[in-house]
Image (tube, rainbow, N blue to C red):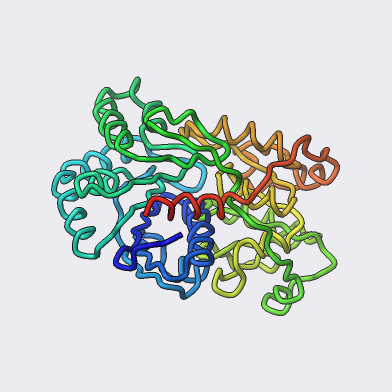
Length: 364
């Protein structure tokens, strides 16, 4: 496939959660493998070391910028809907200015194609430049925010703004665990974008001094509001070793914080025996491809929850833990029971990263 050398790609990644970054990085790695001559401008507020660690040092130009607000979160489980509305309205108050500025960026950097997961402003900017616009996601913000319209009619204008913008895409590559995403005029479904990690138990033992003979459990949260009582409850479970990934960290003898730069997240998943988390696209994908049991808690005010929970029940050995128990650090009963849970009834194919890479570059 011939590709015009003067063109590059701009890939916009929401900073709402690491799941957007993980799947985008998988696709970017596939793009660089298949088409190493391409320059990619990676635009996101996710930490640059995280992106570099997962993508590598190929022809990437990193730019720290954000074009959506996602959900304002109290912690990994709870969101602040009113604060989210204020943040979105503040962003949209400068929407025309942001679109014009981004259109100039695309022109000045000879961008021939944009990919969005899943901010809308870059799609509108690319439409003004007349260059191809591809979205990659399993949901979009118009759908997520639509759940809040009955609470406050101000959400209606927000939802319609996103729908009009998404309607200007040339193609949506729709991932598993998805809504219908009806705002997008053309949709192609692709398989899961994830690959199994490499078990590194001995390396992790050397880093942390943990016990290889115990069960290892990953506490997969960016933030979790555990007080001293909850931490002591976890520390009393001395037949388990618990792990977090920074920035989440606690100083406890059986809770160990790992750095993504030392052990990539997929390898952390591959190294543990089970995961405790909230339902999210990234953690579901990693548990599926690494065949790890998942203990999951409720996720409030997030429309995607029901779809993700249905996927958990189909593809992952699982157990639900009430949020009240999680916040108390009361994990004993769930951990005692997870090992006897049945295996998942279905498998989910992967390989979506290479398919997405081929479809994206075909638009150049």
